Image (cartoon, rainbow, N blue to C red; front, side):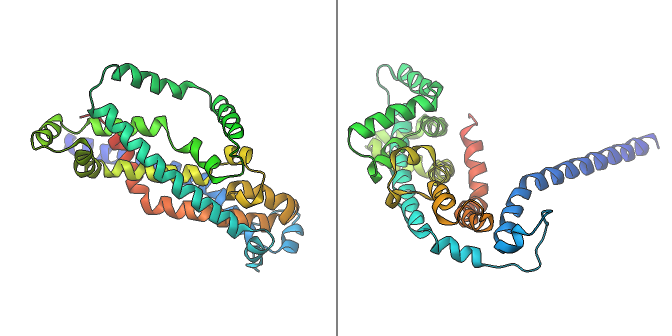
Length: 287
């Protein structure tokens, strides 16, 4: 009888804890998602209806898509999208090549000073981003590469963190596989392509997605090296939209543009969220 009481009490405590947990998670979800709801809601409000609201309304009875039409007609938003896609695809592809080769070298190849080199390489993460931006800006300017895709792309083709993440993932692969492949006469490149990359595919997919998000949201560097509208990215185009497109007071049209810009990343994350979590967890686990 006492065991039954203890078990019922334990179940009640577990139920109460679950209720508290889900309530807190629900409150946090509302806090996180509310700005997105407000952004979408504002984007479907008419200009006159929005400005006539003395008290912001949490809904609208007369939604309109006119703001989305203006997002592509008042400013060259389509051109900004094209530039961003070109920048994102090329930068991500080059970054993957550099990251995979560097991670393979640090995890499998043996050369004098490897540990010291990797330690110094990791120390680059301690350098403030502002210092790197200044150095890169001076270099790109001296090479006359401002307002070019090359100037946008080159400073972003490597990442110390991504190399470290993939290197740790590569290091989890048993050395016996590498030695067996070498006995069979397999080259290092073939071993990398046929064995290591397929095994570490979740982490590589994660790195790819994170880099795409990073490129899509890139603002400071493109803003520094481009003042020609022909090379603006979507993140930089928001300011152009605000100043020269809709005007500072046309908030609904600006929100429509932001929704259009944000939608690809939201869809990408929802489609690959499991891969992202799996890749990060694999990269942070030894053995």
